[in-house]
Image (cartoon, rainbow, N blue to C red; front, side):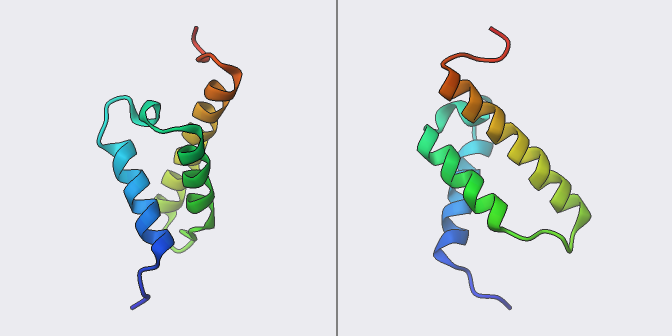
Length: 77
């Protein structure tokens, strides 16, 4: 069984913050979002199709939120 790394713990903690709120990514700072993006991209889910699809979907949401923050507005207004 693989050992749980500090990066795994950090990724899980950031994902817990995202999943514990209705507003998902609105509670995370830009730095937290970028770190979460980096940690999720590193993780290999190729062995599980469903997990890989969820990863791609999550990365898309993270990218949208990073864009909203850097552009200073939401997409819808």
